[in-house]
Image (cartoon, rainbow, N blue to C red; front, side):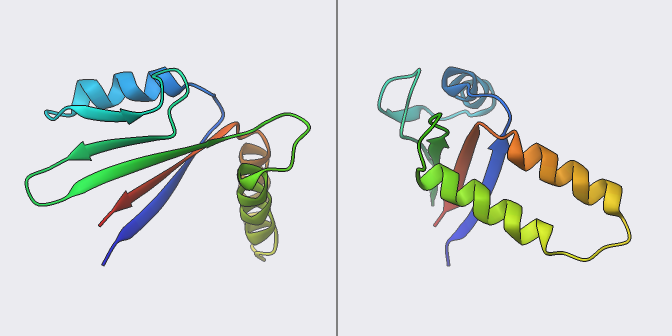
Length: 106
């Protein structure tokens, strides 16, 4: 069964992500798109692969990224907690997010 994870980033740094993957992976990175603005990255393994899909903010436009960030913000905003300072910090970080990287392992 596939596993999914989303990483939120306050920086919009497509090439930086490729650089990190190249440093930690023993396998080649397959880039869909250009290094500075890729749509997806794939690292193939012996038995499986891992795919990284990028979404980024576009100022003034309501995109799939905007919907994802807004949905995540609303989800955490609805949580009742005694750790209000932590909740406010999480909400602030989500609102400052510039990029989301969806990770999928089949």
